[in-house]
Length: 266
Image 1 (cartoon, rainbow, N blue to C red):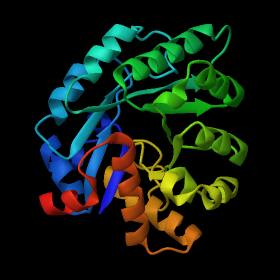
Image 2 (image 1 turned 90 degrees about the vertical axis):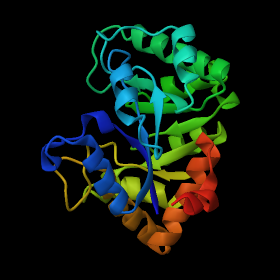
Image 3 (image 1 turned 135 degrees about the vertical axis):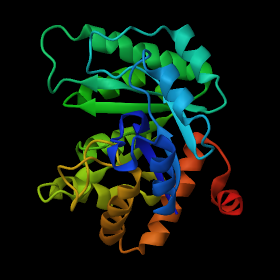
């Protein structure tokens, strides 16, 4: 029923499942999550992440290096393209700019971001964008590098409607996480009321950012239902309808079977 378009399954807490990754995935399937996109944040952990999810046909992956950690091994365009060729890989990222905690000269972030965009264009894969307090530079670099050629998603969106509109004009989708359920997130909910339904995705960013009423606890893909519930209420839809729309959007962006064949496979 639901697709979690952004999660970090290799980092989800497994103690409730006696350390068994397969049990955790099965529990989330039983909760109505039909597909999950496991997003890479560094090259060092990518091989282990890929090996962990590979037995599960309902999990796709991305490859990229998160913008927050300067000490991570820097990717090259060639390496990202090579890793993106894996049949389970559907995207480049997450990548982007994060000026919230960073200090000093952040040109390294901007160089890393450009590398990912160039790799996405070469690989013909969409981008997964992380942006925080870097609106102008994020949009400027996307435009300068021609990111509209591949599009992608602004994941865990928390910015203004003006930025959302600019991203939509570049062909990007807007993804909402559990933050949209938070009491102090009314401005974000107003953005969610305006994003075209055909460009909306839902995610958990598991194991982070658990939605209300699980806020402060470890997050899992099954909690994407709470995100869907909030968005459906904002848009005057039934949860099942919102889930179907966002699933169709996911397959349109990242490629794949589509909702009808997904139902057949299930």
